[in-house]
Length: 192
Image 1 (tube, rainbow, N blue to C red):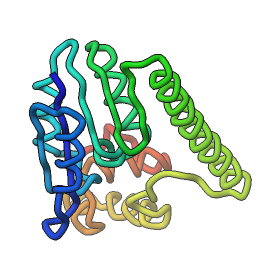
Image 2: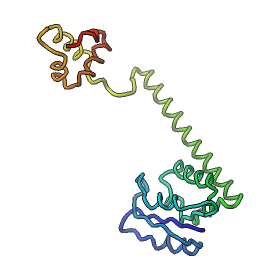
Image 3: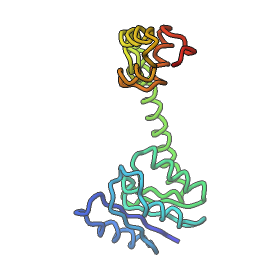
Image 4: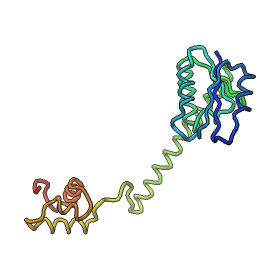
């Protein structure tokens, strides 16, 4: 069975061009969706993918109608391949039911993996460069070293509780304890 999937991003766009092309390609059933491609939740696509069975072929008018990114596209088509379902993109003339189409798609997959590796390498290099300049990644501590010393001084008064000190600095007791331990100001067993 040939099943089509058409998607437009806004209500103003018209899916007729896609639907006509999918019907001309022999689609017996067409799932249509009006939703941005960036959205993770695409109910019609999910339903379409659940409907497909071994030996079926999924047809789209253009690759960007199916996936949000090259990585997403490769994952979807790999899932179809694993389930022995063919895939065709009309505009790009990709047809995984033929050996040439599978070759083209594997090249896309390799490019997606290459792109992912490049991004990862650049991120690691950027973090190393930042560390070399004395900057650390991650979230800024909730309490500065000065605030932690002030909190420790406040806790030296037996009338003041950790709950009160934490409220004063606008943090939780857990954060206060972790901050005190980080600077070694007050042992964790001194809990009030």
